Length: 257
Image (cartoon, rainbow, N blue to C red; front, side, top):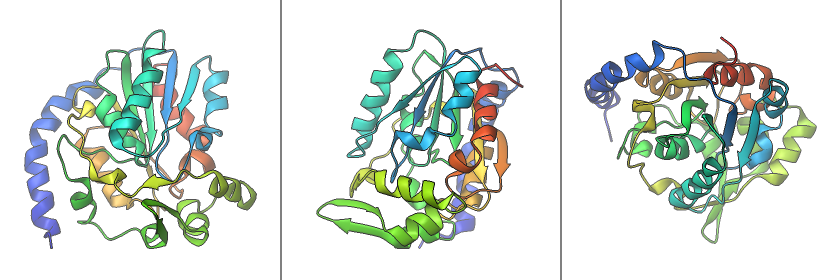
């Protein structure tokens, strides 16, 4: 078993250089962007951004949601790169949950002007995210994962009570119905680079999250020197607090501060 204090001290020491390198990235406002690419996580699809997208569109931004196959990190990164290639200028790359691994790997793209993590994974290059997560108390939703024939999803009780806590029950059941099934091996891959080392970063913490431990979220946000907001939400703060999440994205786009 990994000793949490020893593990975190090691991460803090290793992250000192990251903090030094990253401090400049939040000192100046990010470049102004006109595009936003939204990357969903596990147990979801692109419709999870439906409460955020209208606010971005009203502000005059072009928003595009990636539809991840959720079979491998490499394939999901390819899908995101394909959407990034279609953008016509500076683009804010946004992720929820597991999607944070995707934007961490792909966010070095020259078109990406800023990164926004929403209750999202933010591993360092070649870091074992699973080992990092185990240094914090396990999130309750993990007990509700169902595995069949090489794929996994969240059972109804875990999805509605943990993953989508606080979401309107009708909306939550729709999201449960459209959730993406993930490969059992999806979380095995490690990112090979950490875009948050070189790009302006923003992070939305979900204080009542039962899918990714909120303290782990706070650690990752602090490590990347991100501009951080904290919402009284479950893992789906992007649904229950769409306006606040959109405001953070607009700030990352240089539209609103």
